[in-house]
Length: 155
Image (cartoon, rainbow, N blue to C red; front, side, top):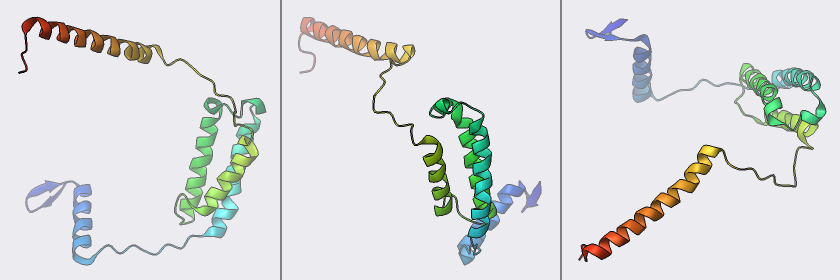
């Protein structure tokens, strides 16, 4: 704990206070970062190679099954983001976007489906969708009957 003016302060709070003071007093000066595009272009294929090796372990008929591919795709995304940040580049950027589009073209171009597959919602959602209108209808009928017996209570 750091002590400032007799008040115990966490070091993170002190850092935030210093940041606030620097912004108020002198404006926020961000350092200039030059994106090392050649590093990113050289390193992104390594991410693609890792993803390709993972995808080749599974049957190509399963490539369009998101539940089977999502962990591999997450690894690809993390690798691409890490590579961009190591090259002092923003994420996402044009280089990474072109790289990921290339991956999509290679592995997921046949994953579109022209037919819509209709599925029932889960039982708890289906129950709520049925019971809410039933209870609202019963409540409205009860209100109409009660108002018609008791006379005009609103006027």
